[in-house]
Length: 315
Image (cartoon, rainbow, N blue to C red; front, top):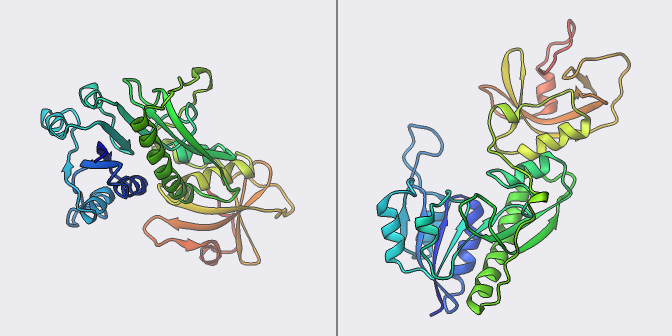
């Protein structure tokens, strides 16, 4: 058998990497899969559901250990008992040194950016929100400071002008499976020449919050468009209308140019289509969801706006 691998991950992003490693049993043997505990993932009253990684691991007949506390002695002991040669991490938690220093060949992480760009919890989202035209994945050895370890290898891909975060994340998960497999092969062959990250090029991708996902309609059309697609389909960029939250999932840059002045966020309807004012023009709103309602197309939303009176306005 090949290297003993402990795999750690939770969401869909990690699943292709797990499957790719499992498909090479003569080169790598997955001795343990670590993931988060079962949780109600739709609402608090639903039955607990396994993580995507747990579901995949059980389908593959792999041993699974669930934890939400990576600092517990039980977790450290469980990993140590599996005697890993290497630990692979893909969208899991921040590991303490007592865990990532266990394997003789090290612990590496798959990150959804071209490090040192976009270090942090939401690299794919922030790359699109900032209008980046290229992205990729990087594998690097873990050290105490998050996302700062020496790089093993990376893969780059262009970002489509209309590609949203959900679509790019799915593509990067598939690309990353190959990157992880190649990294393991390099480690097994002893051919890794790890490269230090250039701190001068480092940028941040902080956790997405209510505060940093609100649309600023005073930005340019292209800026608002990138912001919206960078948060689609989850968690979704948001604004308010009449005191209620509105999630905006899809927009399109437009040449709509009605006469007259309008404040940022002002809504106009033209030919049944819904437009919102930005700093330098109007953006078409294609899909949105009013608080307490189902998601709908912009045209359907426009039909529900009352004609006459003061123009409706996002704020």
